[in-house]
Length: 253
Length: 253
Image (cartoon, helix red, strand yellow):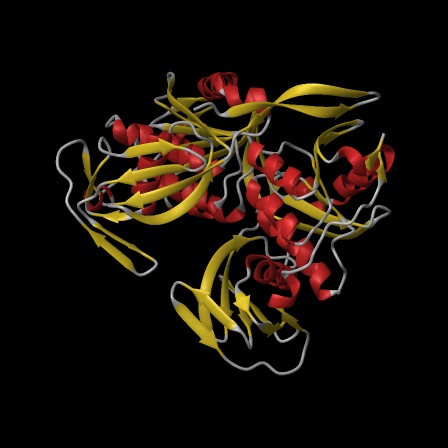
């Protein structure tokens, strides 16, 4: 499904023009586990499998194992995603338990312990080049001006780039891709277009991603969380300029 | 409470500088109705009373009347807001009913019906000037680069300007201010810094605000919602340029 539509709009400058423009698509996603709807969210209709995988894993929606390969996605007025799970879901008082056979399964409880961000080291020039390639690759943003992006990198190139109308969704998609591909995160860098609020940084802490780089600003709470959890937090990456808020020891200047 | 802190950071350009910078404060707000905690959200610690009023009214949290003047706000590690209400709260299965005497009270059920956006008319130059004064007045953004803002205007000047780390919170604060001051919204303009996703436009539809203007883009779903609900949706307001997505009849070009 495409992430944008074409639509005629009025463009006002000194004169008035009627032009076609590209507008980002926003769809409601209804997430069902073992047939029961557990939540709704709004997203761009791309990388839906990765979004749901990243969201379920990061938010701890399912306690136990579940089958990413047997996830069913249907695209209509809403996007409906059905996830079979062996574990338990505890949301709004409802508890679901049922079977799941075969496919990739995750045991959520295995992933929440013992993760530590590694002591990788990056050159300042290397960081700038990575961020530039991230921004060049952000197609939907360049087309619509309305999209956030997130990418995971090993310091050399981008492993995955995800785009979404929501900052959190873009991060969940990028992280979800790494889960599905069995790529560890505790020696990677995450690059994001949006502001670093505490919920964004918490996702990175949960998966022990050691370096978080944004085009824009962190909040005071996210700086404090990054400080405590040994995360290198970098903001305002623009051209040759960037700000290091916490743990500068990973950056060679 | 101030919306920012000062903190020493490393600024990297061609050289490395250790400088003090202003960083937006992000606090967790715990909302309690008649003593029972009903939800948590993250926000900037300014205009908290307006935020809670706008949020409660727009999201329909309380069914019945409640007392804005008797709201109690305490600032600690978290911001804790206690709201006395006569109505019912139905969130996560819990139902709360209790008494509330005196003060300003709202009857939520009265406010949800019969609202229609009015047929106001605005000149293109007037819109540009309003938006410029909105951007000049957005102090926290100018200080921290990390804040969204929202303002309500009667077409001549700004009635209220609200800032928050969250797009939705900024809108709730501006709308909440108008509730507390008994200012009708169906003949006003709302100016916002952030993207117009469906949830943002839904808030404006709910209170029949006829004109919504943003510095940046709307999503396809918000364009479709504005079209159906007779809302004039304007995006990419930058300098002399702006785009009209729906109901251009309110704008004199």
